[in-house]
Image 1 (cartoon, rainbow, N blue to C red):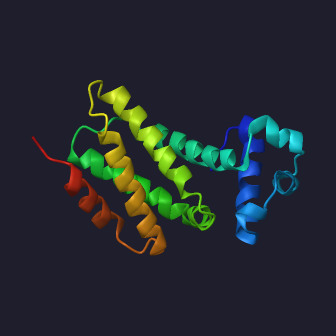
Image 2 (image 1 turned 135 degrees about the vertical axis):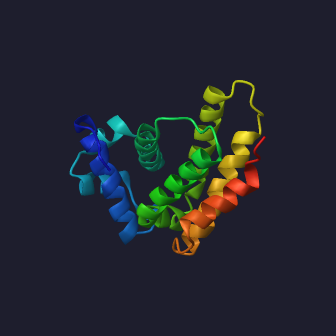
Length: 173
C-alpha cells in the first residue's frame, strides 16, 4: 500500500483487520483481536481509530490519496474520464480480495459513503456552480457497477466497462 513511516501502525492495523475478516465473521472480530493481530495495544488502536469501521474508511482514503497523487490533473475531456474510470477499476481489481471481504461483511455502504464524499469534494473544487446531484450520480454509477463487477470476480473487461460508463454520462459539446 505504500504507507509513510509514521503510518506503519495504521498499516498494521488495516492488514490485521483484513486478515481477521478472512478468517472470521466481521461482527465477531473485536478491537482486542485486531490489536493483538497487529502487534499493538488497544490504546494504540484507539489512538488512531474510534471503531472498526474507521479502519476500513482509512483504507479507502489512503488508496484515494495514492490515486489522486498519481492522477495530477482534473478531467477535461472524454479520454481523461476514460482514464480515470479505468484506473478506479484497476485499483478495485488489484484490491478485490479486500473489497470482497468488505462486501461479505455488509460494509459496502462505507465504500458508497467514501465515493459520495470524494465525488462531492471533487465537484466542489473543480466546478463551483455544479449541479448538487451530479456527484451522487457519478458515485452511484461507480459504486453499483463496481459491486456487480466484484460479484462477477472482476471478469468483465475494464476498457469495455469504462466505455459504457462514460458513454452513459459524457456528452461532448
